[in-house]
Amino acid sequence: MEQQLPNTERLSSIMQLRSRRCVLVLGVSIVCNVVLFLRVMQPRETHVSEFIRKEGEFQDLRAAALQAPSKLTDDESHAIPGPDETAFRSLDFQRTEKEEAIPKSDDEEEEEDPQSDDKDSVDNNREEDEKVMKEVAKENVFHDAGTKDNGTAPATTSPPPEAVPTDNPNWVFNRTAADEFRTLVEDATKTQEVFVMTQKNVQLNRLLKYEAQKYYINVTRDLYNWLPREQPFGFKRYKKCSVVGNGGILLKSGCGEKIDSADFVIRLNLPYMGNYSRDVGKKTNLVTANPTILKERFRSLRFRVNRETFLNYTSHFQDAFMYFSAFTYRMCTTLSFNAYRTVQSVKGKRTNATVIFGHPQHLALATKFWKGQYKINERRLTSGLYLAGTALSLCEETHLYGFWPFDHDRQGRVLTHHYYDNITMSAKHKRIRQHSIPEEFAVLRSLHNRGVLHMTTDRCS
Image 1 (cartoon, rainbow, N blue to C red):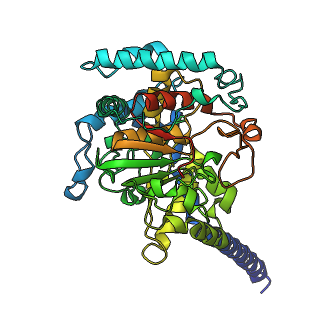
Image 2: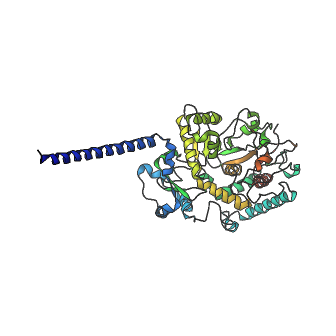
Image 3: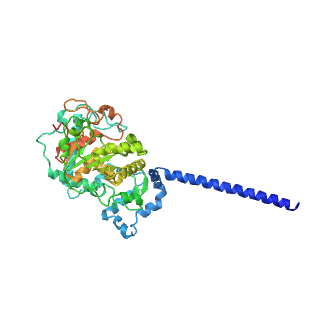
């Protein structure tokens, strides 16, 4: 017994050690399971970060993306790009680190003018536009008709009546000029092919560059399945389109009936419709939404109460396409995906709206066109100019409402920034950092004077 006692103690210590190890392993296993459970229970929108990577991490994939696409299975064959899309895809991956989604210089843009057949008419139109711009500056309509050093649009005052487009019988639609400009815009921006992300202009499991950042997102199977197979809007399918801005000029304008008479109505940035139908109409075919609106108004749709508020707010757009610029900045992706899931969860029950994502290349091409063609000095296009240009590609006739950068109307009435808020124009301009609304207005005014489009800048009734 005396000889076995040490062995017994040794065996006991071994058993105790093994027991401790088992307890430790069990504890680690429990912790891992708890962590895994918590990750699964988190909202699905957090998965977006898994697809976003720094540009430097994708050098090999970036090079591979420039090569010919590999063969796909039969059910994926529709993802093969057409002949034009190869050029679009190469644009994404051939940009240098210093180059953004806007052109490097004005000289490069002039060399890349796509209109070779109609060069004479285009040159004449450009000279006419420049003449109008000089007249606007001479009249001092916008005080300095530009922006401050920080990009802020200057405050405006009541303009002289002769300095703005008028609504009188002398204005006539110039079909020839409109057709020429439509060709010019379409060749430069490829609206017919890349306005909306579809399964034909992106590739499954390939990288897509953000429009304003040096990041890429992987087109996963889930994202790919969310996209429509083809462009939902046809080229020149609509005879007459209304593009409705949200300017305070619309308040008490009585333009609702004229707006709704169009074949296709485009609205900007999820406007509040409320009881303003007499002034802004009821019809909506396409409404855009800056993803930051979801963050500011609906707390990023993170909670059920926020999603309910969003669905109630957008009840006016039940049969419309809801357009989100999901791939301009990384922060826009999660917000846009949340909107897609929120709408999709009640589609066919509470709404028939369809969420679509803008192709980042289209915004880049549109920015290059407008800033190059008209030398607009601003960091980013406004939604108004962007959608006006899009309508010029999609529609035979384009009519604009609610586009007015002044703080007074012709009758001297003080205007608010939006028709549905109480913020004055002069106060709002102090907060604008990215846009030069007066310069954009001058461009649209020149197109109005040429009969390319029509701007309603006074009361309709």
